[in-house]
Length: 151
Image (cartoon, rainbow, N blue to C red; front, side, top):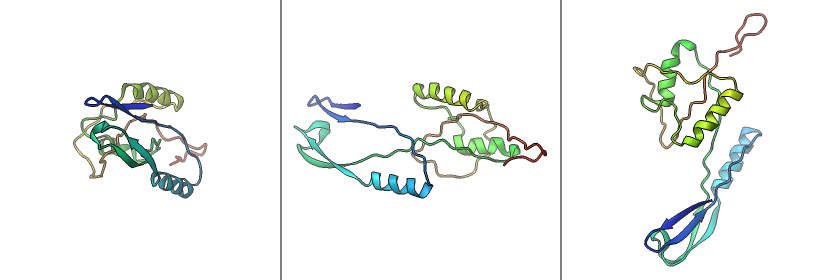
């Protein structure tokens, strides 16, 4: 539960968070999320909390995905891909220290190597506005018994 305290009035606005996983057909999951983020809930502000006039408001549900992705690319472009995704300064490190522990655990469970230092000379243009990119780790591709790679 997150509490915002308006220092002028000392009234609390309480926001709760739920973290969940979904598994299903992507279109169905996308429809569920789109419908969920379109929901508005009544929210009553008392005595000008958070700088708002006293009254009834509608608060849109904030839906922010926490997603795990496996991205495949040619090894020779590792530095380019890492710079494109994580940028020149962030290097894929989380902004929250708790997330460091989660990332460490995920890396161990998935048997990944940590994100190494990389050359940031080149970067492909891509929109990353309002998205935190957290690097879990890297792994080499695996091969089938006949020697072909599983891309």
